[in-house]
Length: 188
Image 1: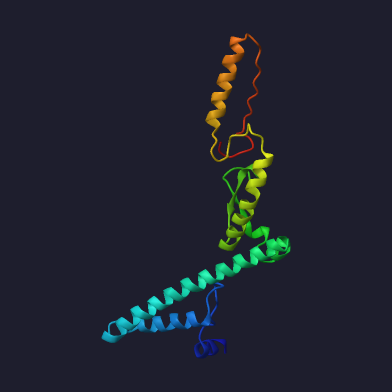
Image 2: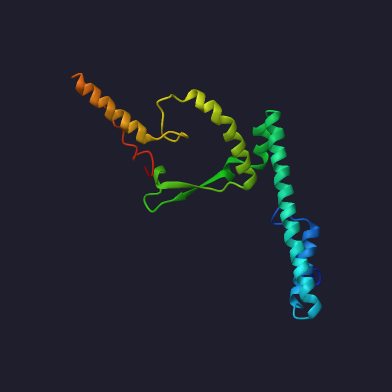
């Protein structure tokens, strides 16, 4: 009975992308039917025109959907309810996924995370990052050079060398501490 129903009704249309509308899907169906008859003289031009319409409509729908998502995020940021608003749509489980390495999987260090963040979530993260950067610059010490714009760890190495030379000139003791960062991080 289900076979007969599927023959009569066809497969149900599933919207995989949230921005896909019924109009776009109808245009896709029309484009597919014209593609089958593309060899006929009139159908070839109609197929190209319809296919172009499909691409334009998908692009416009995608841009509109992303703009709507950005507006929602900005509104929730203005009303200080970003965690409740965006937590419903983009949960932390969607943000990253652990990917095992070849070693013992019982140890946490043998996993790396792969980012599975959707585009609207990436926009939200950029907004948050741009708001946090000025605050972080106020907190971070002037001596911190790594991972900061306009600064380099090479400058710090040069500073250490100059410091060593000055201490040698004045014949004073100088003590250094070097930390091995290979243990907590995969690649340094």
